[in-house]
Image (cartoon, rainbow, N blue to C red; front, side, top):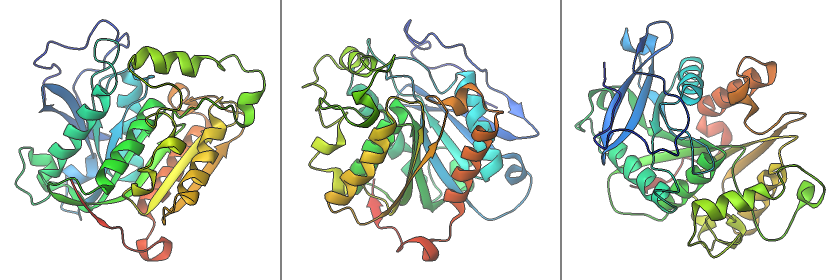
Length: 315
């Protein structure tokens, strides 16, 4: 149903992950190739949607992790995870394949991701370039999501959506941050103790973004971002892992939004005893299943029982 290559001939040498080739998985989903600014992106729809006339479904635009350096939308890790999310939550998923460092240092990943969001938004009136996106998503129920570095990107895409950038209108209802990659010069919480990955976050950030102002750069430390209250959704779900060095950044994120006047609803949930992105590494474990059910619940909450109707966003 799609070809598995980009116009640029594939990813750079730093993308060391293996690739899951294009396929039609009849018991879970369909997915296809889309060409966005010469990049490769994947679309997942639940199989039962493709076989019957049911109502339009929520749309998740997902940004993969990998420290801004590795992984792709085509890696088996993300193909399999988003396969499950689409099937279990009954949502349409667009998996964004942004370019990675060091060949394409930050902020390329943010700019590529925003171009992908704008491309998706071309389908809001049912006349965009992709048939599936014209037919299946409910553009009044759009979500951004990501894990690790992708969680960081999802956060910043939410801020861009909230600043009223001209373009087509969609409703960004919620943002899902799974073990998001945030950091800062000042140590907080578990960062004050000993941890084998304590110094890694800063090293990775500076490698991926040689032009950064440091660990208090607003792109990595939301507490230093004057635009953080512009987050353009009404609901946020943050999931953290008990053994993750970045765990307390997830809890602190809630405090940051609150003290800066963001008026939405945010929930932070910890999976105790688990490591960073455990749900990708061991997707069959009980806590991974619970996390996916948590995501499903977040998608399917009734707006009137949770928060006010989300603001219209200009993309």
